[in-house]
Image 1 (tube, rainbow, N blue to C red):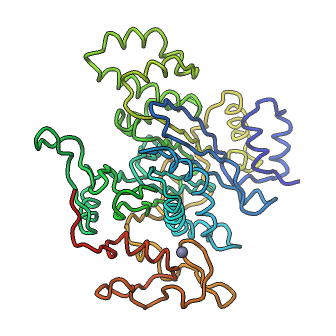
Image 2 (cartoon, rainbow, N blue to C red; image 1 turned 90 degrees about the vertical axis):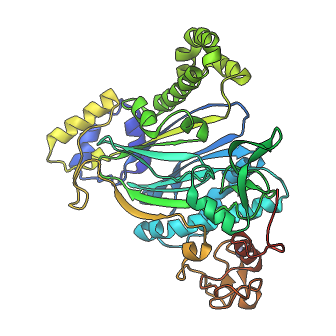
Length: 467
Ligand SMILES: [Zn+2]
């Protein structure tokens, strides 16, 4: 009998598994390679435009638990909810369909960053076909063993808190106000960046992009803004040490109120479900504290209900927040990647004890199990990949698989098969821009090629756009 990931998840959930059974498994030398993943979620809605995805039990090869992985995502919609809903329902499938069939393990993880780019762009193209005007941020996290891959457009964030107490940001904020590189890219692609003009020329609010007036420089959807607001995600892939770690994925409602460190520190030691509620609670406290004119009114409501109702998920405070205070949706996922303590060798009784006590007390062991010399230090995170360019030529690479077994070519973005003459192949220049460098990337179909050119500002019929 082989011990499966789901069995381990069961074991971690329930302290009722007899110790003899656990010891028996160890004595039989059954190895559990993958850490378990636990997720908690909390949200308070002002506009109802935040959506999230929790898929802890994905599998690549049916029946093979070693091919399991987990996916978590936050989508913060704007100008409506349809882009967020569409992305929640389709983005993951579009990403997975861009990974070549039949590859496994390390190869699968290596193919993932390019597949994420293809999947995000495909989701944007398909959603825009529907003719709806809303848009969304998207922060998608794929966890396979100790490897965490994060792809993101917009200003939702994913932070990593490791056992060593180091808090790191795995995403980049695509906000025009704070991101100089993105401002330059948008301007170079034909967008105009400025603030809203009101009251006889007074500039107010954050930097926005015109046409459209969006504060974000990247998103999915948003067909009514310029094409230079692109869906190409920043992608970062890291490998955690054997000590595991905690991810906090949340929309900007959280990060406008809390620093990365404050969010991480506020919930250390709590299980994931309570941790998510604690982060949202702290965010509310910050919002209330900052609302000085109404402080007394807030304190009254707060003392009455907040500590209990947020932790318990009661809605009365949510109702109170609808009227004032909470300016944006606030969604928080906390994901714990818990070391595979059951995989220690059977000859170390101390480990057995540590595993058993962690089952009883429901907390992570502070001990790192060093299985390889490469990752021996506690809390050390190995950076495997990071790329944030908005240019598809740099993101999809020349070696991105596109040739199918037949004479057809497969578009690297939408995965549609076409004869080579229908699209753009290696070394032919973009039709719309005779002056630009030849396209050296993989095969793209007509639709995706046009999308690529539009994103890079090469389809502009007029040299400048005005507000
Ligand atoms: Zn295509």
